[in-house]
Image 1 (cartoon, one colour):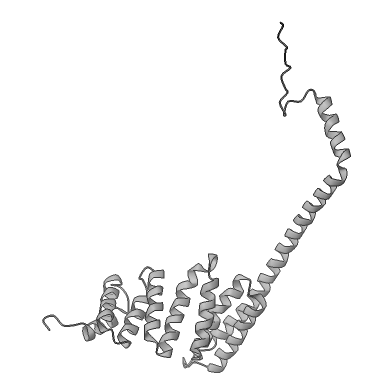
Image 2 (cartoon, rainbow, N blue to C red; image 1 turned 180 degrees about the vertical axis):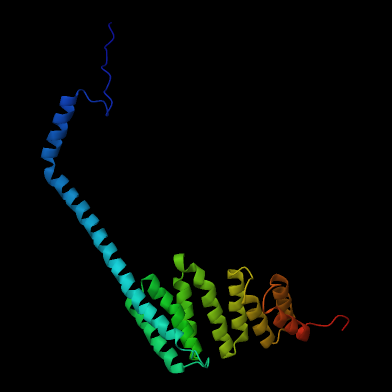
Length: 237
């Protein structure tokens, strides 16, 4: 019995000839013109909406920056340039301005940064609980481009807790600041100070010595040496 020859199937991407391919494509477009038009319209609307959103976002950022710069100028004027005295009324004005930036532009980078400086203003007004609230809210929002300001907020939280007399909480925040900055800068001295104030002279001694060791060229080295000599146990004692 003769074998039946099966004609091989053509590949999906194998066109029989250019004329057939063009005819098929034309028929598809004609038959589905409404659906294709709808798809094109949706793409156009999305593209236009994305462009409009980008323009609106850029304008919002500019407006928030202008308001933020005004608040920063007020904050800078809160300390008298001649006497160095703090001016509570100016700090209060700055606080109001930073709060306004946050309320109007809270979703922008500028609006989030305003939380940090609202905390600074509240701290200088000795409104420690309010300052703690702003610093904490900033830490919750400080990601991406704002990551580098986290250590500053931690320092503010440490100072605010210290202002309340809560030296244990202050030490916890300065410890976090120390880790965030890899143990450099003033974080170690901040930690040593509140540990000493809280009565833990042994740990405070360790922090002063650590600062001296890691910051041999610091202007504060002499201060740290004086503190270490005053609280660290003497050899043989």
